[in-house]
Amino acid sequence: MARGAGAGGAEKSPVARWRKSFHRVRISVRRSGVDYFRGDGSDWIAFVVLLASVPAIALGTITAPEWISASALVLPVIVGGLVLRPASLLALYAAAAAALIVETVVLGPYKEGPARVTPGTVLVVAAVGLTGLTIAQFRSRVGVPWLRGGTMLFDLRERIRVQSKLPRLPRGWHAEMSLRPAGGQSFSGDFVVAARTQRGQILEVVLTDVSGKGMDAASRSLLLSGAFGGLLGSLPPHDFLPAANGYLLRQSWDEGFATSVHLVLDLESGDYELLSAGHVPGLQLSKGTGVWEEKTADGPLLGVLDGAHFDPVKGTLRPGDVLMLFTDGLVESPDRDLTEGIDRLTGEADKYASTSFRGAAWHLIEAVAKDVRDDRALLLICRD
Image 1 (spheres, rainbow, N blue to C red):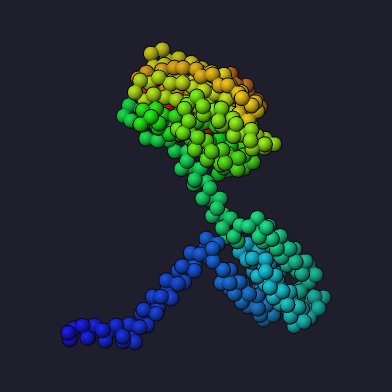
Image 2 (image 1 turned 90 degrees about the vertical axis):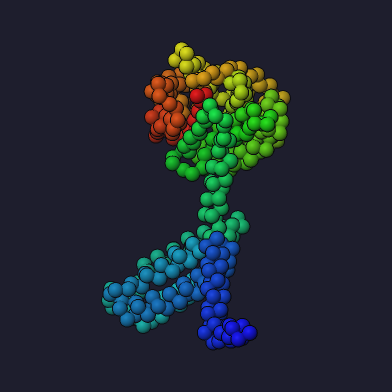
């Protein structure tokens, strides 16, 4: 009982109460900081800091004009344009304008010395403020929180990467995918969706090239990858491309077409079917002959012809065989045709035939189409 009473007394001591209050404040500040970074919280913290910096800069300009120029007021104006909402931004601009007026009155006419508020200074601050206000109004118009835009793009990029991951294959099989957007961007018009169906016996992979490239095709690519991922495995294999074609036709996009190749591979026997919607041919390396064979299936582009039919081409992957599926950015460019690009790709791929194709997808894109201004994707499936 004595220890209990002592413990209770210790908990009620001023030091214990101060520690508990400090802990609550620290947790609250940390949560506010996380919300602030994510764009979910209020912008009052940033507004107060920036608003306090305006008179501090003005005071520095008045007391030490040779070190702190009057144009230094563009610093809080620039930061405010990036992090504040339009209403808060207007209040910050009013404070900056008042600071310029005070500096002009205290320092005197600009003709009396170089460290004065000149018309050029006013024009620079005003131009930067107008730019920041335009950016803030655009964010407000599209409904994206003030700091959440970059977070949303990062989240979208990661979702595309996760959705493009290939499922784990049984022993004796290896698959890898490499995707390179145009211009080194983070978003691409090429994407892949894959799933193991029929209790894991069948591997279905769909490689799609949306019209356009890079950021121009990113939104359509994201929408189609989600739709195709939902269709894959929910329909019989031969019904997938007709359903995907119907989906694109219903969108009525100005650039509503896409090419796609659908692989249906039996992981027990190695037999496969390849269905194509206007896509470039696949390539199969036979271990026995060492020759690359084109696998060309017939079918129109997705999103162009209503009621289109897609005829498959069949094949078998035997031990040691390799199947390559890719988009046209890897083998076609303004200075070379499809045949020349395929010859170059197979020539580079032959270097891995005697060893292993593990890790080869990325290196093949680097060797064949490193500086091509188009999206490039390469899928390798090997049977050990």
